[in-house]
Each structure stands twice: as C-alpha cells, then as structure tokens.
Image (cartoon, rainbow, N blue to C red; front, side, top):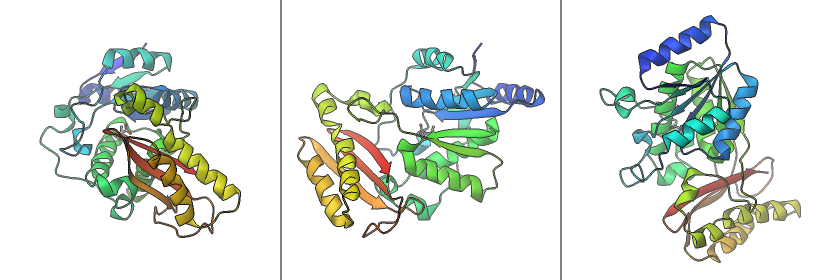
Length: 281
Ligand code: PAF
C-alpha cells in the first residue's frame, strides 16, 4: 500500500509511526517525472531500508527566473504508478505553500563548492537545492538518503552539508543509469527533438574519449579537453557550457593528471536543452 501525503503534519505523523515501529527510514528526494535513474535509487533504498519515503516537489527555489520551472515535466499519476512498482511506502507531494509558507529567507550555501561547474552558470541553483534538501531532511528524518551520481556536484554538496550540520544520516551516491547509446537518463531528455536526441550521446562519447586517452597515457588536461570539445563541436546545435577535469573532492581544475580519481564533468546545450554528465576516472 502506497500513501500519498500532501501536508506536513500528516507526514510527521507517518514518520513518527514508522519510528515507533523501529523502522529504518530510507529517503529519495525527487522532482518527479520518473525514469529508470530515479527508480534505481528507489529500488536500492527499498533493499536497504524498511520504510521508504520519496518526495516529489518541483522546487522553485532552485530555478533561476530565466529557467524552465513552468516547463519542467509534471506527471503525478504516472509517477505514483512507477513508485508503486519500486516498493515505495510513502510519497510526500507538498505544495510550494506547504514548503515555503512565509517565503524562505534562510538559505544555505557552501561557496567553495558551489562556485564551480554548474554553480558558475546557475549561481542560485545549489543554494536552492541545499535549502530544500535540508528542509526535507528535517521533515522526513531519514536514516539513509539516496542521490544519483549524474548530479555529482549536488551529491557532493549534500554530503558536505550533512557533515557540516552534524546531520544524523547517511548519504549514498548511486551510479548513473544510461540509455543503450550512453545518454545519461534525465527528465530533461524528453525536451529533445528526434534529431537532438540523436546528437545527445556526444556528451558520453566525449567522456569515453577522455577515458581512452587517459588509459593510453595522456596526462595533459588541455589536450584531453581539446579532443573532447572537438567531438561535441562536431555536432550541430550543441553549445558547451563547461567541460572540466577537476579534483573530485574540491571541484578545482587540474592541469595534469597526477592523481586518481579525477572527475570529468560537462554541461552542454543541445538545442535549448542543457544536459549534464560526468565520469570518475
Ligand atoms: O535532483 C533533484 O531532483 C533535485 O535537485 C532535488 C535533490 C530533489 C532537490 O530539489
């Protein structure tokens, strides 16, 4: 039986009941529009915890005014059906009013980590993410929460927040789920036209090229980046937002590959749709 909860007092009641029954609470925060990537997080949480809570909330605080908040896909009925197949116990589906009844003046940030990669072109995004995730953690009080590696920077920030704020929970990062042609699953993939969809795997091809070069002994990061860029620029209607090879703990740029692992991360516009992807090598 899956329970759909819209209001905070009801959520708190259900969480209290689960705690009284000594259940280990697993939590997967989402913005809905489920695909296999979300479902893989839920299945893992199902295996590892007793009471599985997910949230579906398209968080206005993490969208820049120019971004796609209104356009972001919403498909509650389908999401409920998919969540059922993954064994979810409770879906928290709050309104923006429930989450931000009096506006939100307290906003979290971790400047040393937000000022890189996606945070450069989306400066308000991660403070919005950290703030909502912190609120959701306070409400759900999970023992373990699950995030995907596709949003590597987000996951790193949330881990750091949990340490910095002495949160009593574990954060687990789960592997990227890909289409057969390598495209990382994302709710935004549905914005792609058929021809853009054919173009989109160039992100993963570029990452694979980097892996190949490093395997063959290439250590110069400008060289690797140049080759990756040429793969993406060879495709029509692509525009690179960033393409960086960084220290996976600090997200700072590297000049040469002198240590492992390194994080290779990129964001590329395919048409108007901004896609991200990464690999750890
Ligand atoms: O990754 C997402 O879907 C969102 O950023 C999250 C973590 C649910 C916060 O709104």
